[in-house]
Length: 544
Image 1 (tube, rainbow, N blue to C red):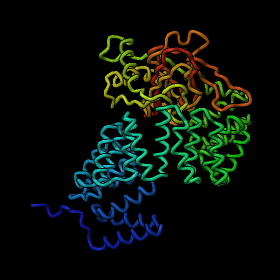
Image 2 (tube, rainbow, N blue to C red):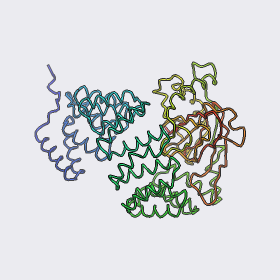
Image 3 (spheres, rainbow, N blue to C red):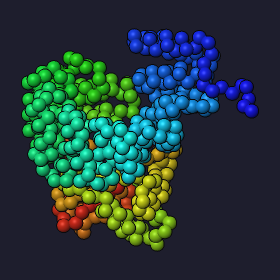
Image 4 (cartoon, one colour):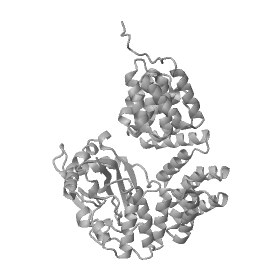
């Protein structure tokens, strides 16, 4: 016999009316009052699932995803018979909070409670995709479509899973299917254009669907920006700018078009770029990306002291803003300020060490041969992705934890000792690198790059990381033996400046060498000529 104290999700007298009142308040835009009322209900009755669902939805709508996930997990744990709606919302909140490890089993529970729910199956597909399980993501997306969730969003999730899983023909077909269902679906347009470009290197073919959509809907700013970025990646910067200018002729006050135009014009007319930033500031002056674009254009104009003022504002907002730190160091260099050499102390911050040989291989060359073979199999496309810094090569994401190939899985072990030594060698300090050193870190992103002859990286920084890296897996014969071909460079400003800021530190590559450095440091790769390819792995680290 069940204990009389067990609650089955029913609500005491009066709570239903209060939940309905909170719902009315939400519809009227009075979210704060609704939240207070719902929290009062839950304080009296923590198992009131209707109140928890309504409050969870309100928190998600306000982008308070961690609070929503915590509330819904607590309610599920306290409730004997959990409604399918609550299970689904809990899974969605966990996914929104980037707790993917917890979201996947939560979606499985939601599907078990509502086996015919295409929405739950689609959520599982998204979670699998974020977890890097692309085959499982495609299977779940097909399941969602089979359960009736056949809409542009579901087809896009399927297409993206196929793209990430290397099924390029099927992915392209699904992206085109999305566009038949919804001709203005911006993510499908951008992904299709990128896929066609990466498979063919033909910018005109890649832009064909974008052009058709823009003829039908000339005011769609995001599509114009997508086309401009595609053309920029193909080296057609002024054509990309012209595409944006055509959009501004139709929508002269659109701030995102002005911002994108500034980013392209900076290379050939920085004064025009500044005019675009100033137009964007009229409507979105407080946006950090607009302020950063202002700093870029001021640096391109040589106004280094103004750059220090603008980056100061960005760093007040976020002391770890890598973009602002990179621009500030270049401004110091233009001014001859000694702070540049303190910040960019290459002897202290750029360090190289050989990988460890992972268990299962007799020596490092044997491991590198197997790792190179595994990576070459992953590089199945012909051109770099849109908006990447590499030229004449390809880039693919990798995740050792979830990789099927033993050599890629072992890479996490191979980098362990060099990374620990780097952290130990940093020590404490108040500068942007040392003050974040907790003695521990985790990989935020990892990828492999294969460059062919003439391949290089334009000088850039990594905005998301704390520490970045370059690990050399396979090099063409003779690389670096003359004039620094293929060498890693530091210090060259990625923004063109009136007084050139060339590299002031170079590092010669070597198979098995891992180089670690602050993510905000300008770095690039010199072009090389060879019949072979240059194969690397790179990753960003953040404090743990």
